[in-house]
Length: 238
Image (cartoon, rainbow, N blue to C red; front, side, top):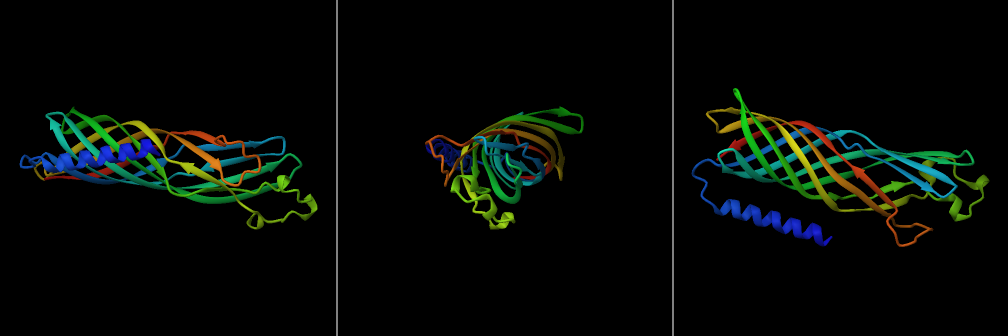
């Protein structure tokens, strides 16, 4: 949490520094875009010898807003905030043959500091850079119930997943690192541009089961996620 607060403060300081400088040379810019995002994430949670829970995440649109400043002839510095709502499906397999399914969603919000290098590609300009920041998760992930641990006889189990008591994961905010690149085309004498971009981000999905009957004080789920985005941005210089 302290790391998240530190990076947010640094990002806000960068915004104020950029705004405080002279913008007469049209070196400031703001852009917004939409991407096709693949979270590339799957959780496999083994609960002793009783069952395995597999949670698969689905692709989703990802939205981003960026503000920045050109800091050299061929370099830019900016901050961005994104948003994606990923759905997921749980498949719960017990060793005695009982199966259950459920689905839900959660929000992924990356706040990133970006550094870009620009180079010529004929009538287009190439863009390549890196980004670092914090990934925020704003919802819990709900797995299915631990019926075996609740000492409920199997013949008294509910037959439908909606009747099961959920097992909630508290997701922690974490650091995010990645690279991005693409091609940019200027429009309206350089006052506007369009970008075709790809981006990949590394971040760990770390969670703790809130109502875990086997609570041992450790993190219960750690997953390396690598969202890959392919999209288009429209930007304006001022």
